[in-house]
Length: 179
Length: 83
Image 1: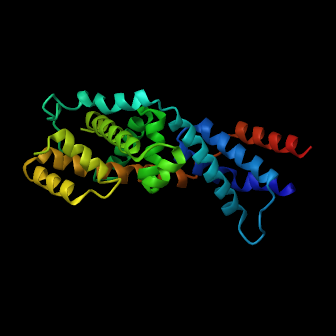
Image 2: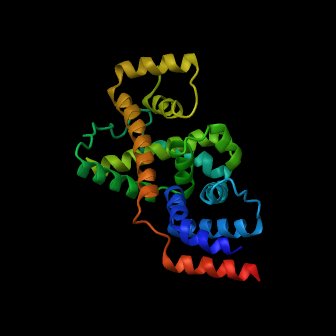
């Protein structure tokens, strides 16, 4: 039991970074870390042979998924239909690009790369929470689509539509701010 | 012939599932004549790579630390759970 306080000082920062990288919201990340320590107290199944950090990270992963699931769960069916139809800002009635995708100058220097990532961050922050969560699960963590759908309780088609929508929005945001 | 709207949808989905042979064929034909959709396809892949980098950056940034008020709160919660 005394271990818990030791773990907090030893692994607290690491767990927080791990959660922040995936949840992107400081408060959600703090809560996930807190939930992790609570679960660790209640479930003393920790085997001495595995490292405490690995064990805690395993618990944290579940807490992160729970949080992401909550963000995505707030999808009403009507909202999905709207998302599907609502691509009008990107295409004209004939299905042609309204704004033609422009050539991106790729960031070469380290400084330019930092700037690019900073803009990416801003664009990501503007996305609805559920699209951010999907992005994290699919593009960053590289979970299989099936897995994501099961975890988030959405259909594969829902996921494709939302990811498409998210990529379109991100691409446009980057183009407006990077070029 | 696919429209750009349809082609961009397939390009996005190709990151998430295996397209059918027919879909791949139609997409390839469209990309042969449409540099804008080709660009779009490249850019959403760049997007994926950059997102990964962004996440790795946060995770490995030693300057990012559990805020002290959150740390104190969690320590309190641990204490109160013990009793």
